[in-house]
Length: 200
Image 1 (cartoon, rainbow, N blue to C red):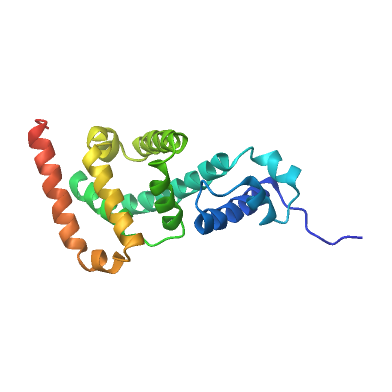
Image 2 (cartoon, rainbow, N blue to C red):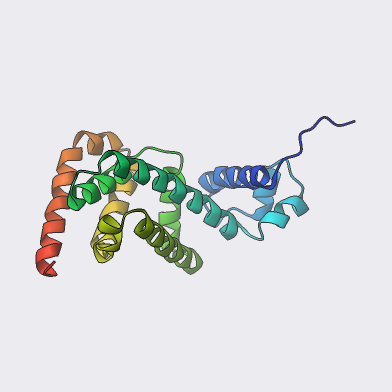
């Protein structure tokens, strides 16, 4: 009689996502097949396909998990910094996101590099961006909903992604951490520029 523990659906999906994450980072998203992922799990082919039809579906869940991780950090930050004005909150949360060292950063950087080559991934990126913005609107109306156009501003998004890429690919995270105050000054200056330009 087998004493092997039966995994829940959540545990199975987590195993598949972890297996895929390892393969994505090893081979790149476009070079990773469902067979690669299946062979990296303890599950059967049918078992994996029951939960995910393709690697894009798996990547979507990994990125959603990363967004949930970030939302948790934002909620804690807002609870601990309720007396700060929205500009301080906004800029500090953005800088913290850029220099954070977590398990999702390598996969996010891979994702950013791949979207340039794959229209389906670009569409997935846009979908995730829209979803996270709607989620943040519900967390703090003053910081996010009232300033949605700033939060979704092309320059802000490009600035965030450029620092993340530099931190992860060039290994410059320590440089950015040491100069966190400079990043905050830069973001606050841009917020002021944006407000004047748009009569806010």
